[in-house]
Structures are given as C-alpha cells and as structure tokens.
Length: 403
Image 1 (cartoon, rainbow, N blue to C red):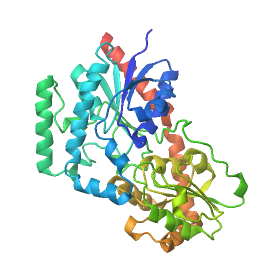
Image 2 (image 1 turned 135 degrees about the vertical axis):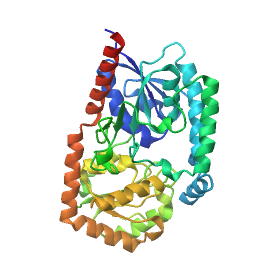
Image 3 (image 1 turned 180 degrees about the vertical axis):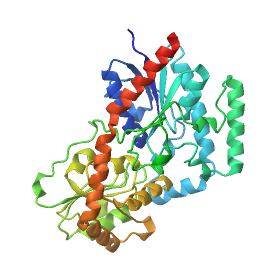
C-alpha cells in the first residue's frame, strides 16, 4: 500500500529546522515520501534526512545576516517590534502562494508545520488537509498563550489582513485566532516538566522532548589534549551572537581558571579579533555543540530552546544570558526550575561570570535537578515518539476516510 505524502513546512532558522530533522528522517525510514521546502541555506541540511527538498524564497531572512553587532540586531528588533506580527503574516501569505505552485501537481496527504510557519496552516486549510503543529519552543493553547503580548489594535489589523486574504483565496476556518488554535495533534520538542504550565495541556499535545539528529555540517573538535580539566562550553547561538565585548569578558573571567573553555563566536566575529587567546581556551566561529556537550560540565548559553534542551539532555547545568524576549522566558524558567542561573546582558561582567560559574558548578543539589530533567527528557521519547504519533494520526484519518 502506497504511504502518505507528508510535507514539512518551516521557517528558515536553525532553531526551528534542527528539531524537525530527526523526525523527518524517522518518517523517511518508515517509508513515507516527505517533501521539505527550504531556502538555499538549509538545502544540504534537509537533504541528509532523505526528504525531497523544494527550494523556496523567504523575504524576511536577509536583514539579520547583514548586521554585525548585537546592538544593531536589538535596535532593528526594537524599532520593528510592533510590525513583526504583520511581517510574520505577510511571510505566511508569501509562503502560501509558493506552496500552491510547488504542490499544484502533487498535493500532500498530511502537513507538518512549525508553529511560526503559518503558511503551512493556510495551505492545509485551503485544501482540507490534516495538519500537525510542531512547537520548537513553548506550546500554546486556550489557557497558555503568547498572543497576550500583541496589542488589541495590532490584533484587529492582523485579523483584517487574514480576513481579506481568506476571502480572496476562498479559505474557511483561518481567522486570526483560528490560525493559532490547537490541531488534532500538536508536538512539542521539550518535556512537559519544562513547558510553562505544562499541566494545563490536554491529550492533543505530545511533549516528546528534544528531537536531536545528526549534524554533519559541524566539524569535529578533539578535546583530548586537556582532558584533565572540566570542559565549559560558551555559545550565544546562530543569530544573536555578534557581541565581542562578551567574549572578551569570558576570556578575562576564565583565563587563569581550571576550566577547559570551548567558545563559539559566530560567523561575524573572528577569534583573532579578540586579542590574546589563553592556552585553556579553544575559540572557533562554530563548534560542534552536540559533540562538546556530552563532555561539558557547564554551558554558558543564550537560552535558545535547542541549546537549552541539548544541554539538559546531556545533564549539563546552565548559565543563561538571553539575547531576546523568548530567550528571557527560558532564562527565567531555568532559574525557576533550579537548573542554573541567568543574567540579563547589561548585568554581565567578568566577575559576575566567575561567581555564577563557581556557584552553579559546585551546587550538588542543582546538578541533581539537572539529572532529573535529563531523565524526563530520556523518557519523553524524542523523534521516534513523534513519528509514531504522526503514523497513528494518519492511520485514524485513513480509517475515517474509508467509513
């Protein structure tokens, strides 16, 4: 029997793409035809899953790549914060029209879409296709929602935009609020224990924990030469990372310490620009995070959800320095759950870093809480559990279609 064609619709950002890769790979191995629209930057990454890549263009991904300092990035986000929801809707509509062309001759039977890739939701509604919402960050439902941060005035604007678009395209069931309503199946890439108010989510929500796949684009980094020192990883992620002052503070803080420090600066800052690099530091523009974390005793991070989940899945406590709003939520969550400490960027000094790292690394009760969260993650099921739930949904849909 021919298996269902599944389409995976996402936005072009590592924090959203990476959690889907192992799930897509699992579905391909189970015999499904999976297509995955991707921008040029992500073509090779997606191809490794075995999915068929469909090239498309995103109109909103170029700006941040052009900015060279964290202050510039924050200024752009601050200056455009009121316009960001509308830009996401405009991006969704642009993606929808590209999906219409891509799938004109081969409609998928099921759509998986990242919670921010609303073009997938619009396309599914247009064609009456079942859809599964994937949360690379915190899940939302009728009780827990991030939409409260959008003003009523902007909500009215967004609702008007969606209404006009829906009427033009003949789409029903996608008013502004319905765009964010839960699907029959919603998969979240964190354990329920980390989710905000996790007890308020019903059986429609499956918390599978981090879905971690292979990343062959990351070069290996041997750490054997200093294996007598505990390893500390420092990284601010893939976007909000051009902050040279921070990296210099880290060098000052841990130059004469007993730590083996592995530090990623991102592609916009060369290690050479940071001055004298101490012998106990390895500084690269990119480091293989999944290779380093199992060897690490502590992680200084921006608090991106992928990085947070990957660290906790390895039993590594955190010092979180968030660079944007969503990361601040995660930073506070880490502190609330006793898994580490957090500081806002303007609170960070070399002395603060030294004190925090010492306190977190020496706190045995904190480490035990991290191990408990690691166990939650291991029991959540990951990519295999997600694929099983998707197969079950397809099976039920097929049975209902035959009745």
